[in-house]
Length: 199
Image 1 (cartoon, one colour):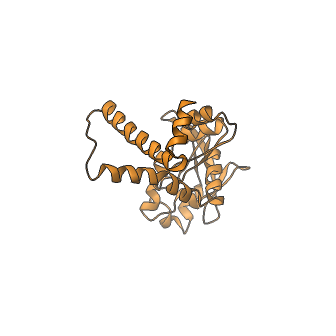
Image 2: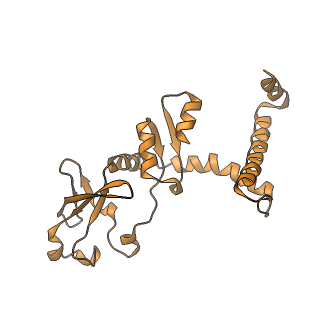
Image 3: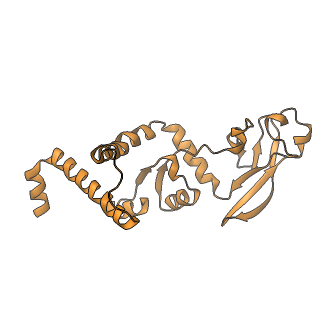
């Protein structure tokens, strides 16, 4: 979608903002390859954190050493790589787990293992951008959520009137077209819109 927007806008610099539901490492990398700047938060799906253990964010990655720093100060070093679901994943752990006083806060296994995607530096840069611009999600909510809220209000409490994906897509497209026309009329006025459409 971002690549299509960039092609339509015919601009070299494009910034896109999305919510965490659209978080995909592969798609973020595809945007990065096209020089499209992305803003979206990571999903909060850490199984370790949900169980009360340290999450991956508690481990600091040191790119110069290709190693993580454990909250207790130990280095968690690279061990091996393997492909998972088409992605090359690097595995890290330390042998110091067995004597670490903080192990109960980290894992019940023999070692705490950390996984890192081969292109994870792109996600690290995204995290840094999000930290520098925390208001980006407020901007998204105020610009993107408003049209959908308005359309939902128009529809009332009912569901889509049509069935099957193609028909529902057409119904949604008509709702969006109506919203856009009403918005343009509000901004430009009816006469100016008609002149623009006839030009």
